[in-house]
Length: 291
Image 1 (cartoon, one colour):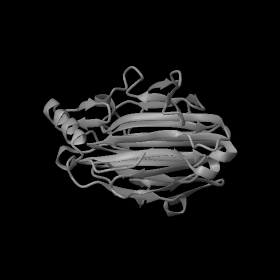
Image 2 (tube, helix red, strand yellow; image 1 turned 120 degrees about the horizontal axis):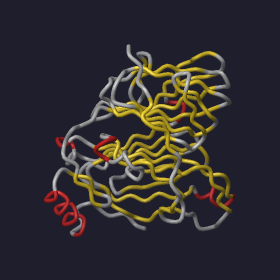
Image 3 (cartoon, one colour; image 1 turned 90 degrees about the vertical axis):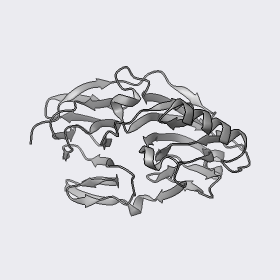
């Protein structure tokens, strides 16, 4: 296999708030050269780097809002997120857990800090990733996959290091999540000196976000906490080695190579489909969810 080399290593842009509960740095599509087409099928990546929220009786978060045409993947590293949607999905995402929501033809959604966690206040850290749906599935029925940490496939690397598979495969072992196109999402949890080798097709759009610690990529390039590594679309194999205890989110997916027409919370394939999404939302076809 040939080496998948680094295209660039980027630091986060200044943070902004989504609602009052999520202080995020946007990498996709906010970083130059990482637009929706380049990162297809990953159309958004918001990263809430470690941030301390003071305790409050009124949980912070984002009120009711619609989605259509894609999936939202919420990965909690620190803190707890509570959520509900108009399709009947909902629950609490604890530390290490994932919520994989398929909005498809449309849902209303709200997410906020879990009530008891919000009262105490603590360090909060999370990722929200949007995964585009192939055109044929955009108007399918919404679904919801709750993925507690203990349901994730763990691949032992030795040295008390392991890969935590959320979706896709690693070394022939499969994660628990159903996906509509070939997508790999996993955490590498590595002790100092721990090393992981990855193999993805050359044309898959691939990136690594350093959640904790610092890493050496392909034995010669360094990335530190909160930086994102974008790989070139050539070669298949790369390695990461932890310079200290590190957590690294790895994403890699097959580009859909379909038209992308996005407007706010809707991602479809044409302007006409976006207009229809707004009409359907306005007349109540996304269901009802109390704020």
